[in-house]
Structures are given as C-alpha cells and as structure tokens.
Length: 434
Image (cartoon, rainbow, N blue to C red; front, side):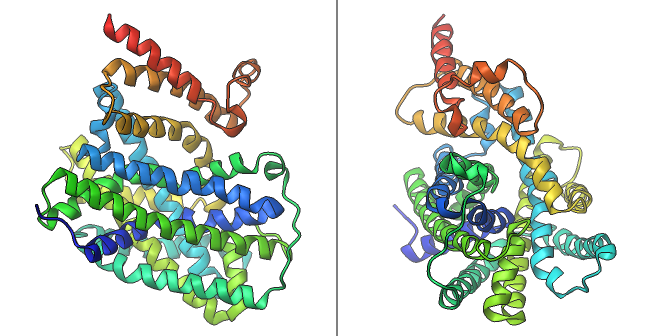
C-alpha cells in the first residue's frame, strides 16, 4: 500500500499553511493583542481554538468524505447544499476573502512607501488593486502548479521574516508590559478571541482547500482512502502548528506596541513594529513577502471559487468565471480594509456555526449512523441562533429575542447554538424514524 513519505507530507503541510496564511491571519492577532492587553493569553487561546482547531477539523472532514463540501451539505437537502456552499465560496472569494487579502498587501507592501497624501489614498488603492488583480487574473487562468511552487518557497521566507521581526522586537523592547484590556476583552476575553478566530475565515476556507490537498495527494499516486486521510491529517497538523505559533508571536507584537501607541488595525501594528525594529528595510522585507503570500492566497481562492461555480453554472466557462470573480473582487477591494471587515463580521458570525455543525456531523458519522433527519434538525436548530447572532453583530435590534436566547448555555461565549443543535438532532431523530 503506497503512502506519502514524511518529507512529502511536510511540504504538503507547508502548502496548506501558505493557502491558509492570508490577510486575516496577519491583521487579527496583532489587533487582538492591542485590544486584549493583560488578558492576551486567554484571548489568544480562544483565537487559536477557532483559528486553528476548527480549520484542522474541516480538513479532516473533507478528507473523510473524499469529496467537496457540497457532498457534506447535501445530507441536509440538495437545495441547501447548493445555496450554502455558494454562500461559503462567495464569502471566502470575491465578497470578503480576496478583497481583504488585497487590502492587507496594499497596506503592508505599498502604503509605507507612498507619499502621505490623504486626498490620494483612494487613487493609490485603485491603482495598486488594479495591477494586483491583473496579475491574479493572469495567474489564475493556469494555476495548476503555481500554488504548490510558491507555497513551498513563500512559507519558509514568511516564517523566517516573522521570526526575525519577533526576535528583534523582543530584543529592542523593555521587559514588562502593563496594558489595560478594552471593554470587549475585559470580561470575556476567551469568547472574544474565538470570534476573532472566526474572522480569519479559515474554517470556511478549509472546506474549499481540503479537497485541493486531497487531490494533491492523489496526484502522487495515493489511492488508498486510509493513506489519504492519514496524510491529510498530518499535513493539517503541520500547518496548524505553524499557524498557532505565528498567531501567538504576532499577537504579542500587538501587546507590545499597544503599550506605546494605539492603531486602527493589525497592518498598522506590524508596519510600526517592523519600522521600529529594523527601519525601512524591515518594512520592505515584510511587505514584499506578505504581498506574495496574499497573492498566492488570492490565486488559490479565485481558482477554487471559479472551479466550483463552473460546476454550478456549466453555461459559463472557467475563464469567464475567473474574469467575473476578479472584477467583483476588485470592486469590493476598493471599499477599503476597515469597511470590508465591518461588513463581513455579521455574515461570518451567521454562517460559521452552520459550517461548524456540519463539520462535527461529518466527523461523528464515522462512528454513528446519522440519517437525514439528524442533519436537518441540527442545521435548523443552529441556524436559528446563528441568524440571530448575525443580526446582533450587525447591531440590528431583535427585541425580546435578547432575553429569550440569553438563557441558553454558553450564550456568553457565542456558543448558544450548541443546545438548539442538539435539540434539533433529537427532534430529527424522532421524525426520521417516523
């Protein structure tokens, strides 16, 4: 029975790390560090749970099915599978994921070297994103080996630059830091960290990238299902260790810089830290590598989205879909980073629990015989609470529901959907038998 060597698994893990490590992985941990202050370690633990643990489970779920996420969601209903999978791909693709990555690369790779003319900032972003998306479009038309090659090269460079940045910061910064947490991190730092981990979108991305990794393993001649699952899990663990270490390291940079000055987002924190530690050379190095990392992620997301939409909309060719996704992403990117984050939060809060419950159901189905009723009940129960949480995140008044749902277990941890999901499964079990 043929299986991957440890070397091949290691480099597959680096590729997966490169696919995951995009915009949100850079901008959220430093900002979390600044906002959490003295509660940093509790907050970053919550971040790692949702930012590393859940994506790893998503990769495992896809490896177990050996197919796309639509096959998993199809166990609810075929219509739900099409709609929800489409929403997921649009979220990680042209509406949030890709535009956010472009903005991060702009703020870290271009802004530090542009004239400080506020009146031209919109024009600068327009021109930068135009060139960026022309390159993304060109590369996405034939991406077969691009992600693998760049991932193996970019990942070590990116990790090396971050290690240099962190070590340099530790050596040039005074020892103790006393930074009061903001209101959101004062009483519930763990749950707030979990929400920030949601915003990396890696759990959703795992449902798209999981199949890509499985196919990469199959291309090496591995056909045995157990060998594919084992290799995928090991590659996921390697990527997860790398992601977790980077999150903790760059999050601490936010704690250090926050004691001196406050910033609007994580990119400003990293640029400030790089400049204070190594000057313009550090800013240039970090900006260059981050830009390449975001470029790789964008090409992967455009490719994955276009390949999925080509199955849903067979009347449109892959090339046309790449062009459409690129144009929409370009338009959204020019809204600016802060606007994209504020718009994406309610949507992600609403859809994440649904993705999570489907992942857990897939993992549970390995040992438990689950029927359609279980899936439908769990999704309906989860969906009611996740929709409410999304509305609440958008600051939309929901009246008496605050009091009603506030009594749910784990509600303060933004996990109020767990009990309704279990109740829904129980109801689905009963009606499924009938």
